[in-house]
Image (cartoon, rainbow, N blue to C red; front, side, top):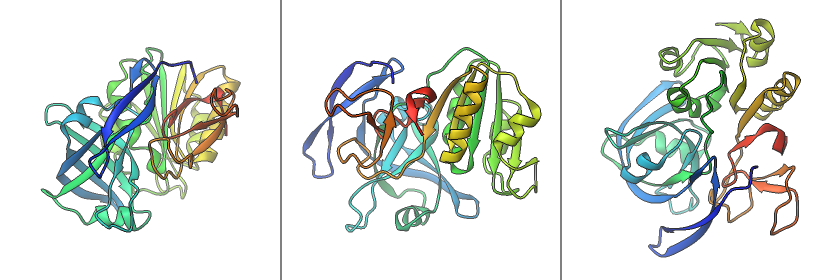
Length: 285
């Protein structure tokens, strides 16, 4: 990671007490986070077990950048830690933020049953986002790593090509991406687009580009890192990782980096705070 300014922000914990968190300034933006009681504007199931939820959240919607994520708190007292879910879109006019998530456990199953008008405690925006470059971009997503690339694609003011990989023909968010840029698709079962994955699309079509933005499963990101290195392309990866606290306190989402941490003197970095977006050449994945 590049050397960024360290700032200290104060946010309200669930108990109402102040908690201080050291936040790194990435890509020229200080990531302030806020605790809000959001209100659900709309929720729908896009495909089986994949849900879209719009939330009214004044401060978070104004501060969020493409690639950042939210922490959603369960109403079940046995699940104290927030569930991290990537931000899919923001709507400044309605002061709203959208998440698209797949049911993966009891927490996300609980959220899927919530309806319009219900309150939901959230914290965010968390982590750092994608830098907005002016060069020709390849935006590459796989599976549930696709949603955080939608707002990025909206905000990129450059020539761009989107490449999306799905399990099958249930291709959520495809139409919205197609309204923003040319899209190529792959499906694992060959039911639509190229049979295989996003790397098969890249190898077959050889799209031109100067920078890659990507989010998806780790094997896909490893392959994209190698692909970018072969072609001397700048590459930014959003790492998907199981998280606990989401604010850098628990060290539960550490990955290897080429840089040595000034405090611990080890080559580790926290995905939830220094990430989830990293320059590919700076992380060992």
